[in-house]
Length: 161
Image (cartoon, rainbow, N blue to C red):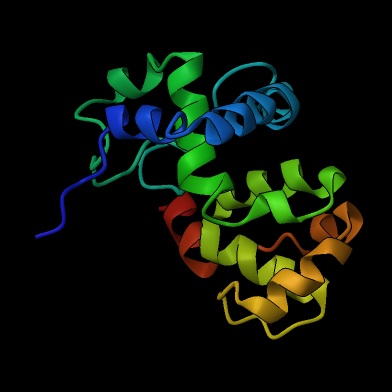
């Protein structure tokens, strides 16, 4: 049986090696802070039953909404970095595209963000970041990502339910 990833795991993963720790510090300063500014400097707090950064409607990560609400900046950044930024290979994109791509993954889910990015990269949108996708990711622009923002059916269904 697979063990659930805990908040402590995300914090440890964000500091796994000196190189990862340097990347995490740069991520917080350059990417994560941008997303917080887009969200009026507050942590994104989606309603239950929607896709979102930290609060899972099945409560896999947090027992209560209060625990989610009381995340520290460091905890929130560690989750964003390990669960989303690294998972979607955002670091491969041109710098100016990374924050928007990450925001899409947080809002619509990693698979949907990857498919939009693949459309922008001009490759099959299969949701798999393989060698062909990685090679083309360097050409993805923020304008294309912004035009390609498309919520998944599940996101809309959950949002309006």
